[in-house]
Image: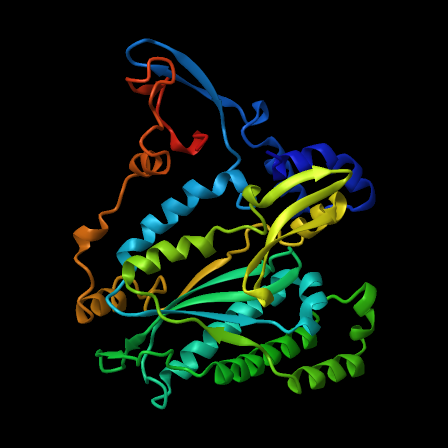
Length: 383
């Protein structure tokens, strides 16, 4: 099976001759290529009965590496289980119009931060309005920058509680539908985003070059601002989840997803990469697309975030400052599922879960457990 690692390993030297990489891109590519190879080092396991030994190469743990997401996802979900409360949850998506794509691409950290801030303020402001719910919900936001064909499409996924905590300390439940009309969300988000964008421009925090170099001129930028206020911005909300367990299962699909996974790659042939994608405009029909290998690599690298940029953020009653107070109160008020249902697993137990209990089964005798030579250290584990 052809993998992302194969594609970059075989083509990166020729690619960088025409496409210089940023520091974040170089770091991601280096880790992807070296993941589970001798470069990352290895550890030795030995069977406690037959004394069979095996050496396993260590993983890179880079968030852009398709080989390293499964276990990281399980750890993250395991940590979130205790935060689920007894209410409905909604999935809301807020997107940027295509007219802002190039600006976002050239100013990633600034624009992505504005997206997080504007979307969070939108939900908190509208939720606090008694016309909608008059309470503070809890919500998690995840940044994605891609579409099914790895085109550049920045958008925020938000998982929002179907209710919130009032200023009087009472829980207020929403109706069966999401309590804020999506058209209102789009309009308010547009206003808050544009206000922050104009401030960033005024403070010289934005760069413009290439096809948008003309926007450095104030009159041209103001013309763009006017155009953006005159178009509709797109947001939507999906139906609520069936229950807290469904929320937990769903979260991992969005938190640790990358632009494309190895299982979507069909083959590489005649300098082209063939991969599967879903055509959402045609009943999610699965199709196969081919891209020149350099174009495939370019699109993949579009979605490497700035080093250290936080792509998952928490707000409202699940924000870090509220977890020990408001979240605890809301769990009591909503009679959340018994904590024993969500017993937190150790990393060792999670590893056994991910590997269907075979993480330490000796491949030689097939009966006994393999143990690490020396100290057990998940920080250098290859899972």
